[in-house]
Image 1 (cartoon, rainbow, N blue to C red):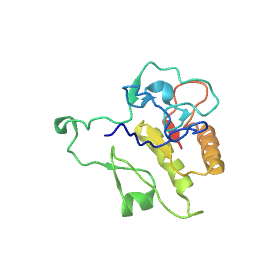
Image 2 (cartoon, one colour):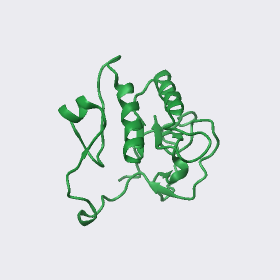
Image 3 (cartoon, helix red, strand yellow):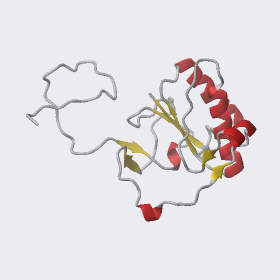
Length: 167
């Protein structure tokens, strides 16, 4: 109300000042989707940041969407066999769900992420979306190159099995 807008910066704020006039685009933030995003790294507003040119897709989706109808969701509980014995035995993941890894420096989060993405891609033919929230640039760069070397990310075509959002 009262013609006041509160925002969160999703990009650089150079030149912005308090009280500046703004224009409502009338549309939500939309990001590219589809096979063209596989193997690409984009920021939180869907812009490519991997220095490989624009993401050439005609498909875009809003970052906020309605949840699927209950009848569209599978009620069957399936365990995702990760191929990592300690995970499968002590803390199994639900198939189709989200997986979050938290921990201190040097405990192996990046190695575990790489193994999960690689195993899901190769054993299940699945796809992964990696969100590098708070990931250090150096570690993110190392992980990106490891994914290229292992074949999870293919720079030549769209056979990659992961889409990466960083920011």
